[in-house]
Length: 172
Ligand code: AMP
Image 1: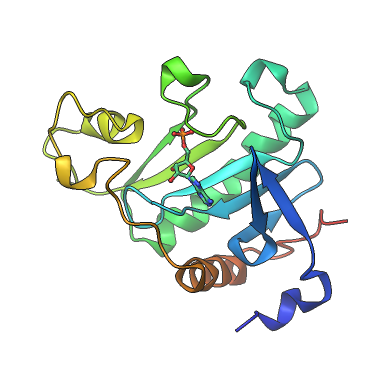
Image 2: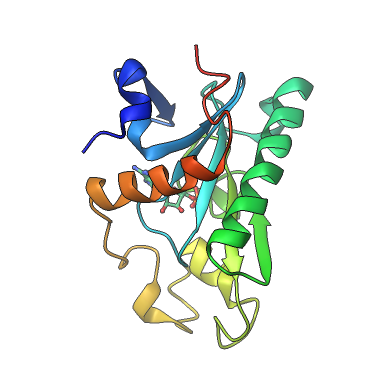
C-alpha cells in the first residue's frame, strides 16, 4: 500500500547512479540529499544517504552538498540507532571502485552495530566490499545476499519516515 502521506508526490523518483529509486523507498528528502532503504542490507537498518545530484565521487560534491549530506546523515543516524536498538554505528563512504564502490553515485552508509554482530568487528568492511577472498562470512557476501522485495523496503521506509518530522520538506 502506498503510504498516504506521500501520495501527492508519488510520481517523484530519485537517481542512484543508473538506478531509479521510487519515493516509496526513500524516507528523507532535503534540498540536496535524500535517504533510501537498502536493497541488500548487510545488517538490519543499513540505509544510505545520497546527494540528489547524480555525482560519482566525494570530491565532485559542492561544499553545500557535503554539508547537507552529513547533516541529513546525522539526522538519519539518530533515528536508525534508536529504531534498531543499536549501541554503535558504522558510517562509511566507499569513494570509487577501488575502494569497493559498486554504485557510481556518492552515498553514505549508515549501519547499526551491536555487540558480537560480526566475528571480528572490522569484518563489516569485508562484507561491505563483497570481498570474496577472505570468506569470513561467506553467507552474507555482497553478491549472495537476497534482494529485498519492494514491499519490504517500502514498509521500512514508511517506519523511518514516521520518525523524521518534516521528512520531505526539501522535496520539490
Ligand atoms: P557500495 O558498494 O558502497 O557502492 O554500496 C552500494 C549499496 O547500494 C549497497 O549497500 C547495495 O546493497 C545498495 N543498493 C544497490 N542497489 C540498490 C537499490 N536498487 N536500492 C537500494 N539500495 C541498493
